[in-house]
Length: 139
Image 1 (cartoon, one colour):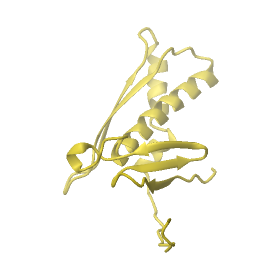
Image 2 (cartoon, helix red, strand yellow):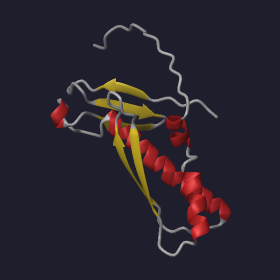
Image 3 (cartoon, one colour):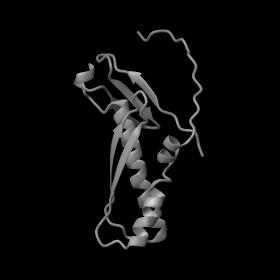
Image 4 (spheres, one colour):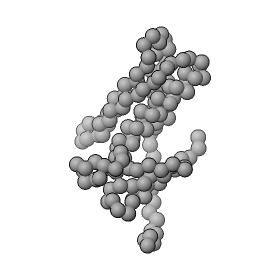
């Protein structure tokens, strides 16, 4: 599997707003008003839920396509409760599939949903390597 990189850089005019770059794409991450942000984009915590929901949906659609199954529109809703002292992080996923899919396909699709790369990352062991690089301020 290839390595992936994302970079977050604070925007000059807003204290919690960051431009996030991935490959040739850019998006804005910010904090909601109630935590001192300007709410110009999803928070980093919300982006985690977005990652899980979208990865699950794409994984289901790719699997169905490989099998030649027409599953119609797939929707995945993710509710996320970050860990608090003594409580684990909780993700609740609701996968919405069209009526009329046979039970065996639905069962298999739900098995595949739990195997999306983001789900496996969150469910598995994670290691961090961190370092500081001091750079001259941008003028």
